[in-house]
Image (cartoon, rainbow, N blue to C red; front, top):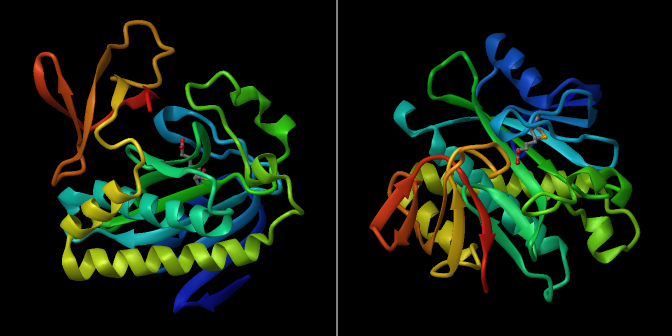
Length: 259
Ligand code: BTN
């Protein structure tokens, strides 16, 4: 079923393999920027770095087609989306919860991960990107147990403040409004404004972090570095001050940070 929200074409499903795959198919059939896909569950939810994304009913799973200003700047969109997701989560939780972005675009409540973003090429127009967003909303604790040993274990709104289940449709509307708002700012003012807003939404800027190149540190041979997180540069790279000087990274994970 498709409908319009904020001028976006919304496609709704009960269950799909992955909303990112559906969005790619829509791009193939001619859909453009502003198209959105939402599903109640996914059977093959994809995470970053070839990981899976557990997608039982109760979570929010959606993908948007968005266009980068330049095809060399696809990574911008993942940071644009990160800001929108972080602001959405913050708006929905009581003020005393610490909600933060973790580079590049994970959203944390305290030291636990509540949302993730997977950006992929649409496979059509080179600047058209699929921005997939997963938020653990009414996700039961037992569904998150397999991720308890992750450097930043998974959590959900339900686990954190155990209130009555939240309305996924309402959250999707808030998210879409924030994402399109941030996307508009990105188109009008460029990445520099997004970079500033991103840094303002990251609570461990200038703190000491452990950074793991090539993944989350579980694979053998991964290199871990400790340094001060200086923020993100004009290309969205993570900037780390280490004993050997300033280093920039385009991929990898922050695996620990200290207050
Ligand atoms: C991550 O590893 O942090 C990224 C997770 C992205 C999950 C979302 S859920 C909606 C969309 N469809 C997918 O298959 N993945 C993304």
